[in-house]
Image (tube, rainbow, N blue to C red; front, side, top):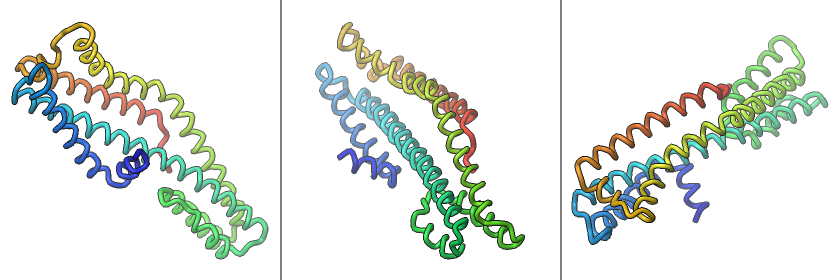
Length: 226
């Protein structure tokens, strides 16, 4: 089931977000409007559905982005290895056309930028008579340096990502704690009163601003892939 969900989110993110948001909205509307404390009414049902759908769609989008970044990291690493193998083949005297044809099946689809750089290096080698093996070796070294830089940037931004996750989890945990342990009618206040709906909307807006800020911080640290 997890593999199916991951594949759906990776390749059909819009459909996955729509389906899961709809399901969570229906469940939240049913619980808030008709089950919680005997039912909080239509206003609570609509508000709970909107909040649940928003958070669910955002979670699916975040999951899709994480999968996309993982595929890109793996593709860059695979491309660097393929270029290194190609350089070794060329240094051993293999015909360039045959070496490239042998490497093409292993080339990751997500590494299109690296493919363009490789074609440019081979074109320069052909036009200027430069050793293609040396150019490919240097390109492989540069790709490995890029991969290591990206890994270091990921380690540096781990605390920022953890802060973003905490930013999302704490309000939900606070509402659950208030309901379960303290006896505070947080759900009824947030979903069934104008003041609570306003507070929930403000909180979601502040969360979105916080996530945008942390995203900008991460983007400023991560090197641009080339």
